[in-house]
Amino acid sequence: MTQPKSYRTPLGRARGLGAAHHGVGHFIGQRASAAALLFLLLWGVWSALTVASAGYDGAVGWLHSPVNAGILVLLLGAAFYHGRLGVQVIIEDYVHTALAKTLSLLVNTFVCFGAFVIAALSVLKVAFSVIGAA
Amino acid sequence: MAEGKVDAGPPVVRARPMAPHLQVWRWHVTMTASILHRATGVGMYLGALILTGWAIALASGPDAYAAYTGLLGSPIGKLVLFGFTVCIFFHMANGVRHLVWDFGKGFLPKTADATAVAAMAFAVVAAVVVWAIALLTGAAA
Image (cartoon, rainbow over all chains, first blue to last red; front, top):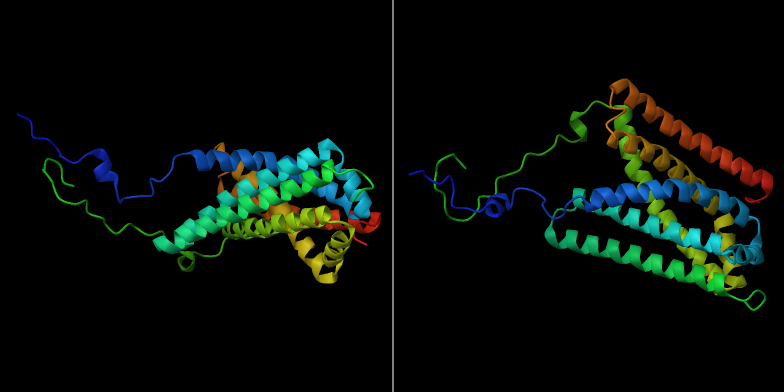
């Protein structure tokens, strides 16, 4: 009769020995958004050069193009998604007490989701505004 | 857990090995690039919030927009935006470096050193070029 190596389950043996909180979602999401941001940021810098000298009316007119408004919302989404993942790693690296870590991660998430929604709605409000009515 | 032993009781949480930290390493350019990647990432996090402020100001009307762009156009505002530009281009170049590593390429010490220096040089040159264009076209007036 063979002696069992251990009565403990694989999960029981793994617990407490590592992160094991998530799979590859973070890794892939970070790289996919990085690839998107490579193009979105080049567009963003180029656009900033155009819009900076255009004044209020010029900026509003620029956002009336659905292409500009659409890409800007994509840029904001990719940036806050990628930024949230990056700052999450920094928090996990340097904040080790459970409460402070949980709160920091929560604040990071709230800031990124909150800023994205507000920024995107601002862009859409301007994009849908009637020229001359603002 | 030793092989062949029947163990029971609560799981034992062993002290995990710690990675050697900054003080045991000789300074190296790849280390600087790594630290800069994180620092510029945080810089861009703040930059994204500045962009959010711009969108809010634009949606709030001409007066709010004039006040906000006046703030961005002040000497301190321009300094912050120039720093933001450097952050964008360094993080972008070093990000491409990371993506190349993900394909298993570019790990030779000489290659890694050269690409680290290239990313830093690109960041400064690209930011200066963008701001030169901004000054010439009146975008940074």
